[in-house]
Image (tube, rainbow, N blue to C red):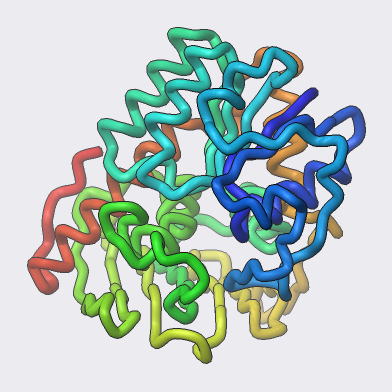
Length: 338
């Protein structure tokens, strides 16, 4: 497969490193308006995971400054869109019209109608569309999916998913809600997708929190209310800039036991109802490589990405928007109709 990457920020550089490790895959083009990055110097890139950026050899790669010209390149089979969120829907649709398959970074779009239009256009043009909801491919979250799929855990009673980091100082567009959706939308979309994937759509939601983007703060504690008094809590967001550390974690309480994980050096553990303690197995895989490799395999076979359906990603956008609406109502329950 011949792939082009649009956007050479933190996620673009992360995807390129993963792409270059996948057999039978060629990076044929990159697109950016930053001349330094087009030259392969990504050393100034920062993100909430990993260290500084790299210097990459783009000598054999076609460099585009205009996205439309890249989409017209007949050598490109698929495009990997690592652009600001407000560009996802229009550029993805242009890519389908140009006959390209599309992997697009999360969030899928800024609103549910735009996300669902992307899915419809992919079907219309018979192209593969997948959203990079990478948690589905991270070993620590696959461990959770695996233990819940055993059947021995029984009914979920309470779940908490937490994710927080410093407000990003490395990309100005992230601090603009009309471009990124804000900290809660950009960051917690991961955990919203995981809750929908594991537990389905809730009946009601409620939320509290605070937004002051000028100070780098955008936080929420949202409760998803399921039938039978089952709840899932999604909490976190952006904290003060620069020094605040990244963390992701989960705790899932079910009839058969509790599963817990934290990126603060606590791998997934099952604490069974019978008193046993079990370290859950995890494969030594790179989630970014795994998701891109799966997407490219779907492209080769013209198959729908069943492990990460675009319809699911559109629902995650819809639910995150409802969470933000619920936050405005300061704890009042609102119906969840996706």
